[in-house]
Image (cartoon, rainbow, N blue to C red; front, side, top):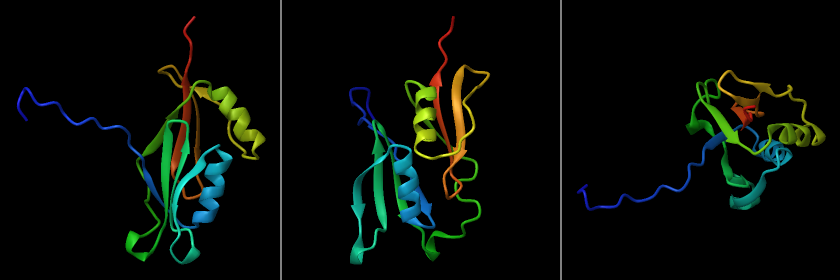
Length: 132
């Protein structure tokens, strides 16, 4: 790349989760307030979809044999969702029927809720704690 070149802008990253029961996973993410944005349903069976909530998105794909073993999927990765107020999100999730721990403040100033989706992917919703 030369100094006069402008790099192409990357607009977003959207993780793809291989899931064991896509309908169960879609229902879970809908409980988190995500909405179905796109889907692929060959032969009338949901196989892949993109769900969005505000500026955040995830893709789900029905796992098959070629995707490898379930053990270890998502290991070593945490998906952080930044939000305006984690306490409000927490109340919303509880009202939707989820049983989640109370938010905690991390040593670096983010108030967070950590939990796992039905396939073991670790999720964290967080907001910055206002300094006094």
